[in-house]
Every structure is written in structure tokens, then in C-alpha cells.
Amino acid sequence: MKTTAALALAAACITLSAPAAAQFAKAEDAIKYRQGALFVMGQHFGRIGAMANGKAPFDAKAAQENADVVANMARLPWTGFGPGTDKGAPTKAKPDLWNEPAKFKEHSEKLETETAKLAAAAKTGNLDSLKVAFGDAAKSCKACHDAYRAR
Image 1: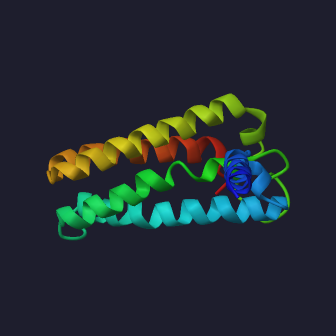
Image 2: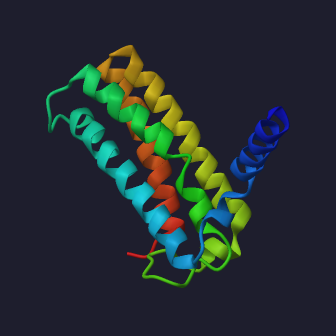
């Protein structure tokens, strides 16, 4: 019985540690995954932006909740940009994304860093700190979009 449980646990660990790209049966699945992750992140980022830009009243609790979602979501979409995912479903990604993987990785890491800072700023409950962190995160988004997203 213990051996069976140990084997099951080992199999689960191996499955969980398998490359994320292996989770996608088709390129279309990876494209939908990354687009979904980026959409959700964008929705929550927009809510913070509305507060930072004075278009919505500042609500420290809502800002923190949304910033936490953004920071968590910022780690997800990158596995959906694997080899072969430049085709298979409609995508706005430019071909340069696959030609410059190191540069694209720098952009993704910068976004993760800036969204973590945004979440930390939101936890302070200070609107001015949130505005600065939001601006830096927005610049990171824009830099990547300018380089790798077709209009």
C-alpha cells in the first residue's frame, strides 16, 4: 500500500514538473491559453489604471486585489508562446517574437518584476505609490506590445 502511494505521488510530481508546453495538445490551445491569460491580466490592470488616472474612485482594497491578480497572471502567458505557436489560430503576435526569444524573455521578466512592484505598492494603500508603480508597469506592457504585437 505504501509503495503504491509513493509511486502515485512520484508520478504526480513528475507530471507537475513536466514542461508547461507539454500541456498543450495543439498550437491553437497554447494560443488560446496565452490570449486568455493576457485578457484577464488586462482587465484587472485596467481597473487599477482607472483608479490611478482618476477615472474611478480610489479603493485601496480593490486596488490591492486587482494588483495581486495582475502580478499572478503576469507569470502565466509565456508558456503559450512556445515553438509552433506563431500559427494555428488568429494571433496578433509579430514574427519577431519567435526570432528574438532572449529579447522577448527580457520583456516578460520585466513585466513580472513591474507587476510585483505594483502589487507591493497597492498593499501600501497609498494612491501616489500606486500611480508610480502603475506607470512603470504600463511602460513595460507598452514596450513589449510595441516590439511584438501587431495592431
